Length: 337
Ligand code: SF4
Ligand code: SF4
Image 1 (tube, helix red, strand yellow):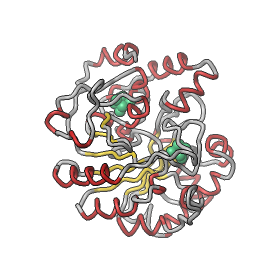
Image 2 (tube, helix red, strand yellow):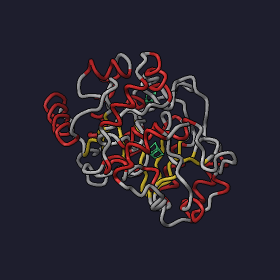
Image 3 (cartoon, helix red, strand yellow):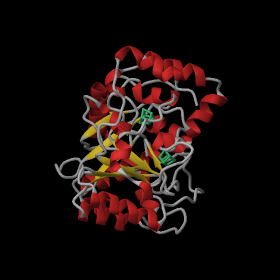
Image 4 (cartoon, helix red, strand yellow):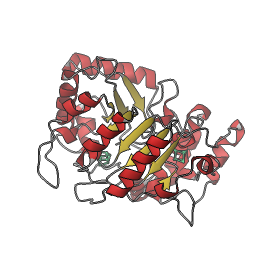
């Protein structure tokens, strides 16, 4: 996989893109999702069956407990809430006094579980009881744009889900962070994050009486279903070109791979969720797993950059998976759930 365009775009900035810490462990615990969005880099859907196994979950908990520097556990999917071990995992991570971020698609609260049919309506209370930070994907503050990207009815469900989260204290209590993650429907980059945050805040408050804490604007990553879409419309090269033109050294310097290690459902270690979807494992031909976790060695690793990394270096970046970054330097967000 070529990295020439990414390396060329950042060359003039003389950035040090080597690991600086492992302060977050990202766990992609399932590719099952109640939705099947057109831009999904995970290619998640109600038909996916991959689930993180019990032994991998236990090893992740052991790693977190043995490494005081891993302050954040970042749980993603698919819709991670659909994994049968999700709630015990959150509870045990909080018991280890770790900050827990869940990549939440909002609609999972309103839809029945795709496999068991059980109601997921208890999720807002469960999140609040455990003091979980939520990174919630919401493509836009309008119905047409959101439903176009995520399917009919998605916007109405997302608004209802946000209402329930506000009802248990998210968006108003300092210990219950509710962040929104926005990505464009088209193969473009969205505008300035601060002005878009103000626009979202005004629209959601005036139209629906809703509040949230922060908004993160991400570029779509040319990975998974979105990469297939770009190929289908013959725009893969053009999109990479637009990402190159928007190269932002501060976004690249905050990429989540510099401070996070990502674990797939089978325990393999990756630099990030995007590399996970591309099969770019840490260790290359001899992939490392959670059972080989060695912090000192991982800190010396060479991160597997390739041209898709332009999505992390463009505009505000794309990191929606690890620790959420301040609005001023948003690219550690990683990937949209
Ligand atoms: S795609 Fe992954 S490896 Fe590439 S810059 Fe982004 S976080 Fe780092
Ligand atoms: S983008 Fe998020 S909500 Fe949509 S299918 Fe993928 S994981 Fe599910």
